[in-house]
Length: 320
Image (cartoon, rainbow, N blue to C red; front, side, top):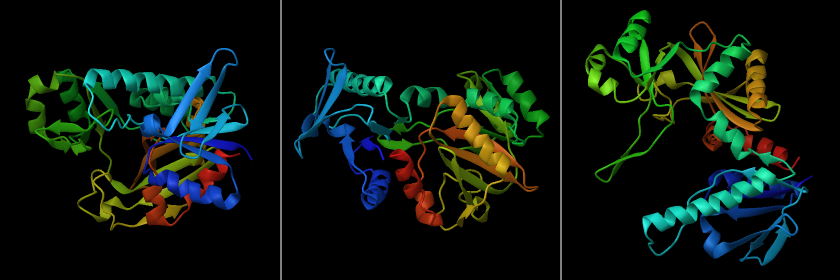
């Protein structure tokens, strides 16, 4: 069993769930809350030894992060400074901190779950579609166009009989007049295509919209894929996009078709990932349609609603 260094942030419920099982199996771990570095941690790199030394101020413990440690790259958040500091200076401090932590993970001789470089490459939705198509495995890749050419967008809309949805390539929080918004998947209507000036502003991602029997979130950890069926069609709230959460719909652990499990493992291997969260649609005729891979996706709500202990599977993998 390996020792485990956890990069996360204060109050991360996912980490708390995993720590509970690490305690049960007697694993040794150290929690490094990346937002608390000024008050909770020292980190030192020296070219003499080429080692990274981590010191926890609270428990007064120090150790070298050598190959006997695995690293769980759960989340790196911006620092909590306490007193306000100028935005420009805060950005410099955050960048220097992130570069240091990434340097530790890039040079680490043990296992990193996931390597930040692999996470970065795997986040590109367009590359994911190409990889998914190359992998095959009888998983459908939805017809997709990314364009700011109104003529091409309209042609795609007509080719798919108007059954088209719009989504962002990367989810963002938009702050408008003190209120925060995000953009979910939405159906495209004819009137949306008339605003050609808006369409020209930047490339937009459009996909064929498939009628769903239900949706599936697959959490893949190493060679193990855990499928959770989300019966989003039982609620008008979540029918188009399950991320408009209605927690009253059933969430059920399911046995995945072997070709789908193989597809998920193959995509992780392609990107050099140990962990990934996949989203699929299951069509009315039972076909699996790939939507996206989130290389550092959330999973705790699936455990809470389905009852399947994803945290236990992950905890044991992290120290393997």
